[in-house]
Length: 97
Image 1 (cartoon, one colour):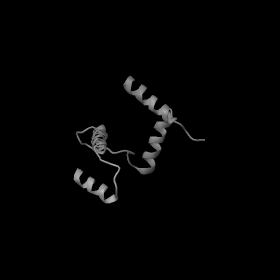
Image 2 (cartoon, one colour):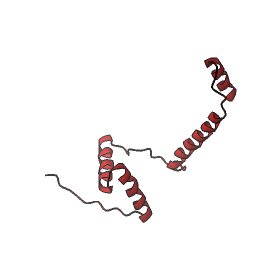
Image 3 (cartoon, rainbow, N blue to C red):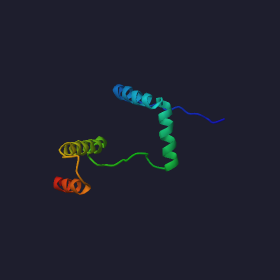
Image 4 (cartoon, rainbow, N blue to C red):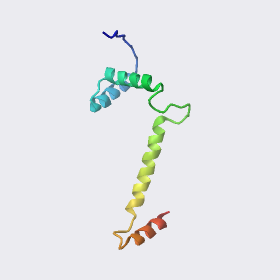
């Protein structure tokens, strides 16, 4: 039989509620998610997500990618097509740069 130990963790109420909501969407409860995190930590001997002393927020990367995707989508709306040939499509793409 495996010996079990308790872990107590204090977090902000809003953070707990938001995390539980996301975990429920994924089919997890909080204890299971923490066990998954700890097992991955032990197996890989590292934190299972990027950690840095960078002053930008972790969400900053996602925000940057979202803005880039939005700009690319706006560019796509300006395409003129359908094209008569692949060569004409490529020429149109080159003009966009």
